[in-house]
Length: 507
Image (cartoon, rainbow, N blue to C red):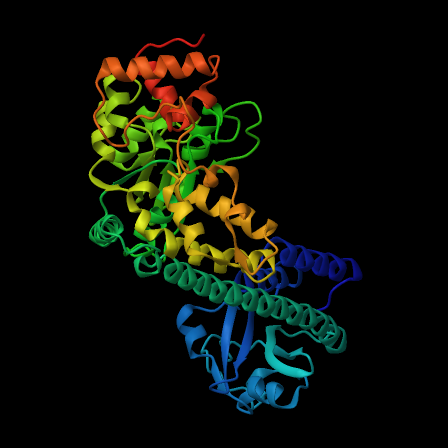
């Protein structure tokens, strides 16, 4: 195994390159043995590793050996040359394996009767002072062989192998930690979004819990409906983490937050060069959610073009990246949510009817806070504890008069508005008990201002009366939708919808 200095340098350079190109230990070790053959004409080579549990030395990778021969190469510590090197931590060179009784020929891969001498080199692989395996090579011996030079080179390579093993152990340890952390976080999420941990005991919420438990076990598409701030996101999580897909990804997409130009790429992905700025291939959120659940929030705001592509996914389970020539099959459960009246959007031509029926397979309707006001004390207590920990000071108590004032308010922003209001109160209040004058102005109003308009909540208002009240509110607000909505006790989006429905123009 005589090698020139240039050959040795090139060999070591190529081995270093093999380390850099892959974190896969087996691939790296195979590359080393192949490089030894390429540069030094070594016909056979093995790298063995010691199993600390069984104390057996097994061939990890081999070059020039059949799979059968590789499987036979297993040694006890101290057994044969390989076992002896692991036991002593010292290299062994055998000039002629046919004449050395320590060579056991376990792999049955060498012909010792052809009249040619075969030299065998076995050097220890040491990691942090311990021998963890061996690097062995053999080749036809010649009188001009410089065994010392060959041993020196193999010891250098075995040191590099040890570093590769060390790096692999570190990577595997990191992966194991990440897997454990992932399992822990998923367990926490499953507990957090357990139906029994949701707040509210009203009849309306009991019906929601019943529906969640019913739909969770199915793979069918779920449509969650309710006003803004009622907790549609929470219900979507609860459905996923109580389903058989709980250990798989939960991917959320806010159809309002993403511009239409980006929504398609985010949902379905794109190929490199599909458009300006697409410098590399990107997996869409449907592909990232494979095996799990995708939550399409505010689905009512999705444009027609994206609706058509979403329909194909629901029908065929196929996504097509932007710029791709063919689709890819995905296994994804779809949960959608909206605060808009999809049936009316379908009637107005703003939402595809076929998509609507694909989405509304199973339906969960969340009540507004004003229709479950008996849950308010429980919600206040829940947010007191949560916000007190976040703010970093003891949360004051809420007296019965304060809770009564909060019950009288209609909470157009629902539970989200309640949480934001409570945070404001807790930050500003410097007493042990919240008093009425600690409440925001909106909660201190005991009755509507003189001349304010109110549309009956949940009642049926004649078209003419409703139109007249809306027009009066718009006149009083000078055409400002937000102020008119407050006068009517409606949300901004609801008034926008009714203005469009009745074809009422702003002043």
